[in-house]
Length: 394
Image 1 (cartoon, rainbow, N blue to C red):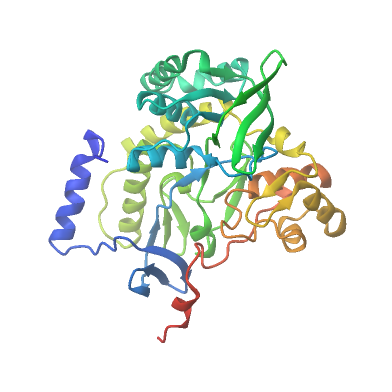
Image 2: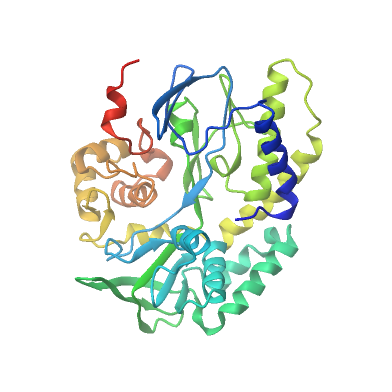
């Protein structure tokens, strides 16, 4: 997909630097581990080890999903997956779709699917209108962006419902057949569908930062653990972070964060760096807007805490809410102890989909705050990798 116009120059500069041999671009490769100043990089040629003395991580974010009874069935995807399938492959992931969750991506994906001619039966937003208006003042920090979002919302028409309560995703042997929900007036509704896209804004991708030695702090507003950095992106010991992997401020802020991290790195190396005052001021405005989003479209901790015992929380390992609660009773309310007893978060996603909901379930049963529950420790490899690559000599 062609980059947005203001960033074409950035892409052109990058291509120029690669062409001149001034930087090495390892396309189609993934960093799966960081250890003692070395990156373990996986690609088609196998495993490669790259040493560094300064490391800038820009790992981005992924969908923040919440368990809904029945979400483990075929036909349930994240909003990001639905968007990628549409953009990259030009396909809709279902014949009749329902989108559930909250946040800007919910509206955006719904509008994009409709524009492409897809059958979107309903867009179900768990945030009530009253809650959305509470973020109005902070959202006014970027009025054009806010108005653009409202314009997309109008395209959804009567398909959009705010303040819904999600009850269950129904399925047969072939996959999803309907979603059962209650509207803002508490009237029970059932919408037939063969695909569901879900997402509650975003979660920061922090696994590499964790194994690289970054400290973390719990953000009450975003309801997730985020890396501890200074305003320039410094995380200590030659480590710098930028983008949504640090704070969920959006694409414009990610570009600014990259410049700040680069300036910090240059400064720490004793090399003259560009002035950063203007970028820091703009970042404050973008942060205000992002905080408005967090207020207007909150994570539904109450829904996660109230999951029935038979509801699946960890889809990788088929761990139920009841199993997590039982583990709390036996081992206490610490995330990694519950993980070891119940296997929640031990699957291929390493807790990317289940950690935040699992913490809410643990919190409710243990009677403590999420920051006291802690987070799952990241393990290498941070992505699934063939066993054979670890058997290579050297």
